[in-house]
Image (cartoon, rainbow, N blue to C red; front, top):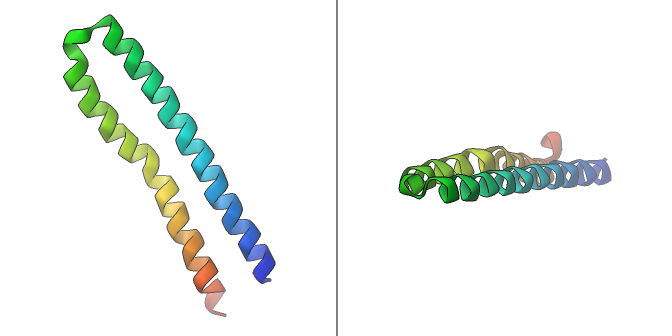
Length: 77
């Protein structure tokens, strides 16, 4: 049972990391495109980009927390 829990935790963390990395990469590329088109809006766009970066990372951090909980205390066992 412990081996399956370890595999599940690895999948949770791995897929969350891949999703967060792809999301932040896409957002960063769109930020660079939009700031190149309208440089006068760079400050406003940068603020929104950092806010969205935190929101994109939130599910990954929650997944890491849940995975660590199951590794440390696998279903109360």
